[in-house]
Image 1 (cartoon, rainbow, N blue to C red):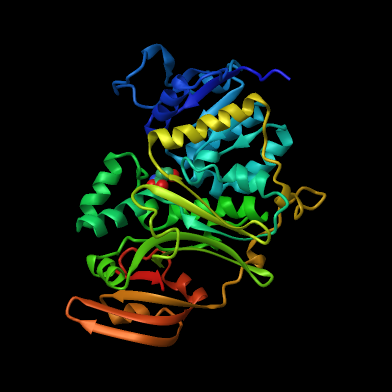
Image 2: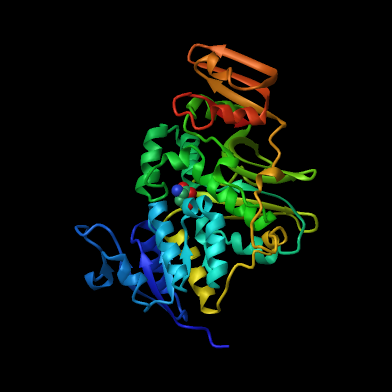
Length: 401
Ligand code: HSE
C-alpha cells in the first residue's frame, strides 16, 4: 500500500513548532508538508515566509484542506478546544501537549474512538525517546511490572549544573528557559507537574490504567539547595527527579518525587536535559531508553515520527486499556488500582519544624539540626504527602532515599 500524502495544518510556531519545521525540511522521503501555521502574535518577526501564517484558527480547522492537524501551542485549554474540533471534523491529530492530554484523557479517548481518527503524541513524554509507541506496540504482550525514569529535562538540567558547576538554582533555571527546555510556567517543571503528566500517559500505555492528574502525588526540586546536592555528593549519590509507576502485589504505586540514585543505577549518568526511561517486564527484564528529553529539535523529531506514522494510518491500539473498558465504552477510574497506604523512606530538609506536622511520620532514622540546614530521614506514610501537596511556601525539599 502506498503511503499517503500529509497536508499539515500546524498550531504554534514556538520552540517545538520551529524544531518540527527544521527536521521536516531535512527529512527525506516523507510525503508531508506544513501548509498553514496558526499563531497568536501578529507582531513577532518569524524566520519563514509570512504567507505560511494565519491568525485565525478556523482557517485551518474549517477549510478541510489538511488531513492532519499538529498542535504545538502552549495553552492546554486552547489546545484541547483545537484538538477536539479537529477530531470532530474527522482529522487526525499529532500533539506534544502532555498537560492537555493528562487533564482530558478520557474525553480525548472517547472523541478519537467515536470519530475513528488518530490522536498520537510521542513528543509528549521523554522528548526524543520513542517510549509511547514502544510501550504500546513492542511491549503489547509483555507483563510489565515497572516504568520509571527521568522525564523532565529542565529539572535534570538544573540538578546537573548545580552539582557539576556549583551554579545557583535561579541562574540555571534561567538557562533552561533560554535553551527552550522549560515550560512557559516553569513551576510546572520544577514542582513535578510536567513529570506527573508524563507519568500518567506512560501508565496508560504500560498498564492500561487511566488516572486523573490529582490521583498522582508530585513534588519536585523547587526547594532544592546546594546542601542537598552536597549531601548526595558526599555519599556517592545524585538527586534525580523521577516518575515512578510500578506494580507491587496486585496494586500500583504511581508518583513523582526526587530520588537519591547511586552510581550503580543507569539513571546516575543521565545528565543535563537528557531523559531516561527504565522499563521492567517479567521476560524482557530491565531495559533503559535514554535520549534528549527537551528542546526544539529532539521534540520536533518525535513529532515528525508521529507525522510519518500517519502516512500509514497508524493509531494507538490501546491494547492494555481496552482490557478494562466495558462494552458501553466507559473507561474505569484507575484510582482504585493505586496503593497510597505504604511507608516510604524520605530525606526531608526543612526550615520550620512545624511544617512536618502534616506528615504522618512512622519512624525517624536520623535527625540533623544546624544553623541554616535541618533535615530528617524518616519513614513516612505516603498518603500523608497529599497533606502538603502543592504548597508553594513550605520550603520543604523531599527526596526518596
Ligand atoms: N519542559 C519540558 C521538560 C519540555 O523540561 O522536559 C519537554 O516535555
